[in-house]
Image (cartoon, rainbow, N blue to C red; front, side, top):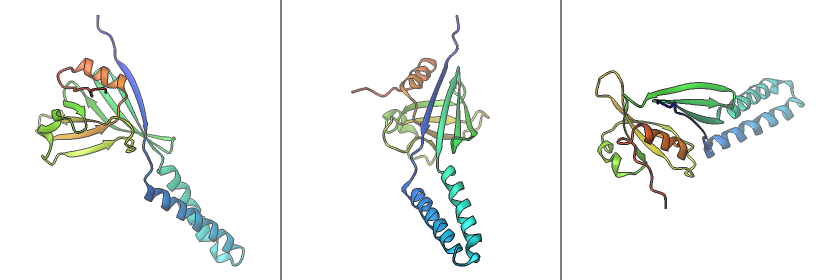
Length: 173
């Protein structure tokens, strides 16, 4: 009897220091423009511009990734500002997956130094275990790419159960 596989994982991306500094700078400029507006009305437009820029910047720097594994399909979605969801990639594990292993693993040595394009869908925090998936596109061409994800243990085990020869699980210490 065939059993369906469904696993979800949600990862929040760490905001870079540069983006935080730009956000703070826009807020300070907005506050200064509002204060200057009381002295002279010409500062109304800069206050509005800096305020809108701060609002859009603040919502745009909050990025989360949602991994959803449904049978042989891994869907990766980007959630911006906890409001807008954009499907980024759908990976057919049966046809596209060549290898999956923890970052730096010997199992990925064949893909190192080949100049393959890399997509990064991790938290960039350095806290979780990052896995790299070597994929080929399903069109029959030899285009290959690497995808960095940060799945939880349940998702890694589910993918390993589906593709045991292609998935190398990290050793626990």
